[in-house]
Amino acid sequence: MRPEDTTPAEHMGEGASPTQLRLAQELLSRGVTRFAFQRVPEPYYSWPLEGRRQALGAASVYHLCKSMVMVNTKAHASVTDCSDPLNPKYYMIIYAARLNAEKLKAWAHALKNSEIPKKYYNLRLAPEEDSGRLTGFIHNAVTPIGSLAQIPTVLSHRIAALPEDTFFWLGAGEVDLKVGLYVKDFVRAYGAHVVDCTYDEVPEDLQSISD
Image 1 (cartoon, rainbow, N blue to C red):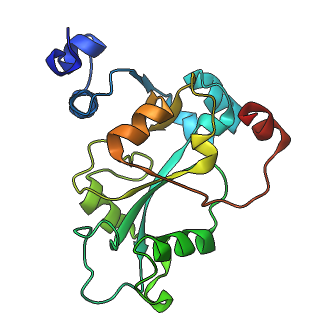
Image 2: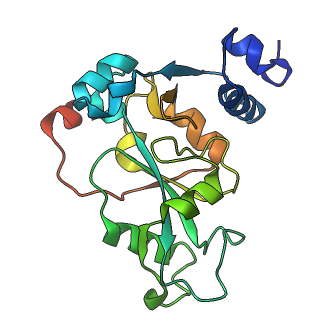
């Protein structure tokens, strides 16, 4: 059976929520067939990272990724949405280490060959109401998969460097729902920009799994 002929229910089995089915449908429509959804217990976000890793069966704590919408607060008044993917108002950022706003700003400025003056760039966390309006998801459930708006996606180069045979994990549209998939599949399906957007310090255990 070809991926495009596979229904979400057939791919995941019975008991999937409407959100799971919708996200699975999008993944399948983009040619991503290797993914898994996982429910997490209510106290998940109060646990240390190692506890969360164990709950998901992730290869390391660095496979537990965060997704958030950032807004260019200094964009020109004519820039109000993401219709120009090289000069959008909003960005979807996926990361696992500490974000470096200056690196993100430099990357965004260079995206359009530095044609736009630097004074028009200042990336900050988007207000929760804007994030919800654009994605359709609430805090701790934000994901580029199934987002209402097509927001340019940035993937930290640290995540892209993870072993290819391991899933990285994202929020999946519901607070207690996560989705795991392979980095290469995700980058191809969503046209994600792989960007050095975190601080340079790398813990020894992260370096060891990236070697």
